[in-house]
Image (tube, rainbow, N blue to C red; front, side, top):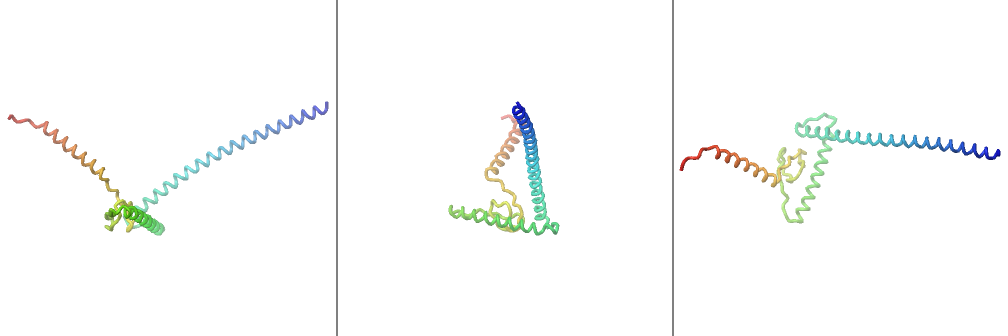
Length: 169
């Protein structure tokens, strides 16, 4: 019977070890899940930080373009931004030229509101001075505005006509 006691003790010991291992694995799994949640929250917060850093930088650059002054330690960075914007604009111009060249049309041009240099009509920034170019309303937007204005004038005229007494005929 002694062998059965030894088997019973070994089974009990194995059961206790298995239970301890399962508890440890469970705790590690919970810790891993908590770490993953925290890492995801960190990534979201860091993404917000990067987004707002970019907005701050963009506003600083716009201020620099408008005023022409910037903190000395940022001037080199602004020069890189301006050069990169010019490079992007040049590449967009080349794309437009290729597209227009195959269609046999002239590329629509306009002038920069800041420096008066000729630029492509749909450019977002001037390739000469880096100034942002305000988006012009599309033809459809202009037509909608004209229709709205015409309706307003018609409504005012109609209201005036109703208010005026009719003269006898």
